[in-house]
Structure formats: C-alpha cells, structure tokens
Image (cartoon, rainbow, N blue to C red):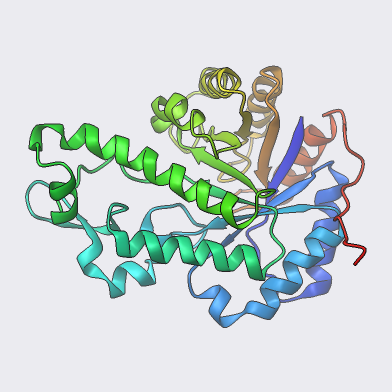
Length: 315
C-alpha cells in the first residue's frame, strides 16, 4: 500500500516546511496532497513554487486539490469562491427559484475558467497530479436556464444532474491528461456519495477512486469504516482503477486514539492501493498524541518504495 498525507499548512517558512516533509517521508509516505484556493496562486506564486519543489526534492509526489473552486469542491479554508461571487449568474438554482452558493458545472463559462486554471497550474508548478475533493452536485437539482435548455424534460432533471456531473468530472480528468499525460487524477468521495463509485470508476481518464471514511465526523460507529471502504476497493478493482482510503485522524477527543487504531486496521485489512491521512490536522484534543499514533500505524505498512526521485531531463 502506498501512503499519501494531506499537508494543509502554510508554505512560507521553507525550513519548517522541509522539516515537516522529512517527517512525512519518515512514515513511509510517497506523496502529499496540497490544497490551493483561488487567490493563493495569484498572491503567493513564489511560495507555492518553492514549497511544492521542496516536497519533490524530499521524495514526495505532489497532488494538488482545488479548494472550494466554484464552491464545488472541499477545501481546508471555509472561504467562498471568488469566481462564484463575481459570476452570480452561474449559480445553481433550485425548483423554487432560490440561488445556492455554488456554480453550476453545466455553465460553459465556468467550465472554461476552471479548465484553464487547471492547465495553468500543471504548466507552471511542480505537480504530479490532481485530487478532486468531495465534488458537490447531486445534493441540489439545478433548474437554471442552462440545465433547463440541456434537459427540457423537467421530470428527468434529477437524473440529468447526476449524468452531467459524471460527464463534467470526466472532462476535468481529461483536461489534466491533455496537458500532462503522465499526471495522475483522483476523486475522493464522502460516504453519502459512495453510490457514484461505479460510474466514476468507469471514467477513462480517472486513475484513482477514493473515499473519506470519516466515521466520527458523521456520528457513526467506527465499525462502519470497513463497509464504506469495501465498496470503494471493490468498485475500483472492477474497473482496473486504484483505490484510496482516507483515515480520520482529526477532530478526535481524548480516548478516541483506540478507535483510530480500529479504523486503520479495517482500512489496512481491505488492502487498498493507497492509505491517506492528515499531517497535524485540526481540532484534535491532543494533536501530538494523534500524530504519534498516526505515525506508528503508518509505519506498520510494508514499504514497497524506499524513495521517489524526479526524472530529470538530460538535455
């Protein structure tokens, strides 16, 4: 099993960042996920370039997550999308005519902007792939003018919404591959969206199907982790895709470290292609204890790859 760690921390202090990446490598991780929000690449491009390069120099592949772009994806900072704020005409509209704070992915202007952003990141920064984090869409059936034009049959709008979301995510992955055929693509779902696994796994340009198995955050017993994880692993294997299971090592109170171990054992027992977690993430009652427990658990995974090096052109 490969190991991925989400690093949602500032990149401004290079020495601190290097120490963090060394710790992440020491647990056997081969890659990090770094979330970027819309304004960051405009305001801090040198810091972004320097930090992501440090990760690669440490032997970590870099997967970029588009944090809250169009308010369509998850992000560590709960901030509104600049694009959606400045383009309110692209927002999702429900059957009652009420607008929601998320851009409709069927608007061509939004798609063009998002795909262009993706292309610029892949060309300008040291990135090995893209993670699409908790895509939104099926929660509200959109009745905007674009969706109504594409699907005149009102009774079919809900199913159309699901189909068009899968098509949109497929095009997003295809955009990544057109820019860099070697870049990897991944989608991470919440447990309530696991019914989409088969459709997403069938997308030709998607490499990895993942899931956030956040039992405690969703007020479930930790035993449900095995059920959630199995649906992802089996669905991914059916279509020849990689599986990625995320461990909840955040938002834990004292005494839940034992449940953290139980969740990890369930995940490891499913033998996914990848186990993922967070580096010193938020709201743990005892952050040091949670991270030390996470380190111990991850180190128990046999290492298949000692170190990853960038391929450097000889020209």
